[in-house]
Amino acid sequence: MAYRNGTYIAFHAEGKTDPTASDIKYYRMLKAWHEHDDIEFKFVNSHDKVAAVRDTSTKQTIMRSLRERLDNSKNMVLIIGETTKNDTDFVPYEIAYAVDTCKIPIICVYTGYSSILNPKSHRDEWPPALAKRIDANTVRALHIPFKQKVIDTAIGQFHLNNLPEGSLTYYTKEAQKSMGVTFSS
Image (cartoon, rainbow, N blue to C red; front, side):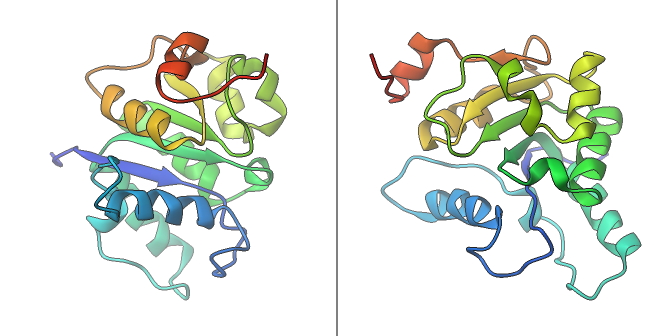
């Protein structure tokens, strides 16, 4: 059995390697927060626990590596940007394996929002693999904005042994305020 202490981060790279051309920029931001000495943001990155695959690797090799990383994970951060719902290969596979096989919670992190108070209102942004599992209530998911303190709190709070209550869990307005989220009047 794998030692499951990592956080798996999934995002839609759109087949691009340019760090500013897709949601990979959000993944890199998480890594930058983690590596910065003056920012409290710590997690065990599941992607660092397994040897990297090359861009020229076969799809089967990449999927085997993804499974190994997920098998070592206690939770998944799913970065949901403008194009995440359009991913037809790796994001759906990662969601399905994380939920159906690994039984780990998904922390749905939405880019471009200052707060998340009504996860259902973001349905049009969900990848179909996530929507299917939310509809069936087979995923334990927390929905949050892409904010450093909120993400850090969620990663520390939700894992294999402490799952969100359901598929549409979110932090209350008061909880988000306590984590530095500001709301307009």
